[in-house]
Image (cartoon, rainbow, N blue to C red; front, side, top):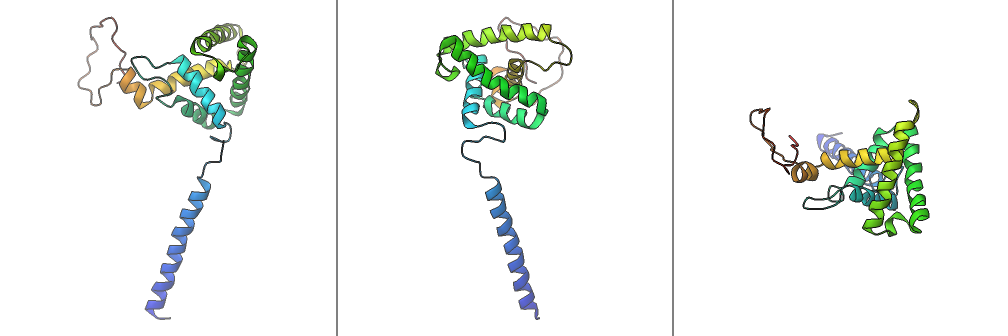
Length: 189
């Protein structure tokens, strides 16, 4: 075999490897229609977005939807929660909609902002009582998880850290005694 043939064959092998890898990645990374990940579908993501937006609505600062908290929650539940907590969370998500139907005769997504706030306030009081009375080995209430993930997702996002909190990208020296003025935002850095 001469050098020219060897280089040609190596080029074909490498080209096939690169094209094959690209094809494999494209096929493996194409989202399934209606699915966000293995646990959540797009309707559940939309529901989580609305729940998070009701907890942290847009005011003079961006809301939870602006920070894409729903997508954060789906990722955290799938990647970081143990199977038992995943079951509690997923069961709670469907229970939330069922309870809303009983209370308002419509789903959470069909309710207006006032009804959503009223419903989540009732649910928050329920989870506080549950957390107070629960046994040590009992799982957390699903709404506790939703609230915690909403707050974590929002305040660790770029939107929450830079728009809702005070943020200095390159802070100077540490000053432990800064005067507080009523209405000042908390520091992100």
